[in-house]
Image 1 (cartoon, rainbow, N blue to C red):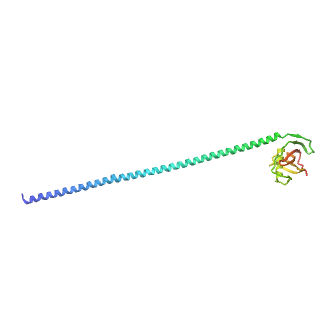
Image 2 (image 1 turned 30 degrees about the vertical axis):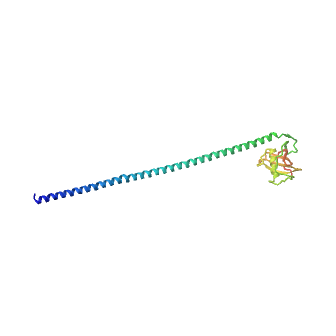
Image 3 (image 1 turned 45 degrees about the vertical axis):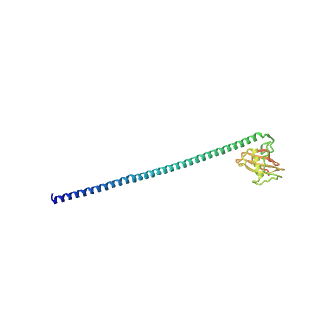
Length: 230
């Protein structure tokens, strides 16, 4: 074999060895790159997915807690509203019952007072008197104490209590009746001429003062027209 052939073989071998070495290096590098990419994808992707999953879970929990809190607050407000409505209804019912009992008691007292009073017709004392009667009315009570001197001034305690006594004797409403005259009728006695607003019911009422018990009606005269004693 000549030298040329030997050199040709050596060159071919070297080229093949170099190619094989390059291919091996590339394969190793490629394998490492694939391993690195797989690691990044597996570990990095898993962490990201876990992070996203955790974040999603936390957001869901936060939303649920908010909804639960809003529901609880709404339930508490509804409960407070229901309690308040119930209390208001109970208080209103109690007030209405008390008012009804008060009205009933007042009506019963007035009825008993009317039933207890016994009247007796007496002779009229003048042409203007169409009817006269006495009765066993009780004193109407008083807030005055000690020695009594009648005060005829409008709005005085005596005038207020006289109006109540006249109301009991005549049946007129003390708040709407017209008082034409109130004057001295003797020692611790007064006379009052009153009527309704239309002056279709006119009365002269005689009252006596009972110590510590107030004014007591003693006689009522039904008048034909307003006539005052001066």
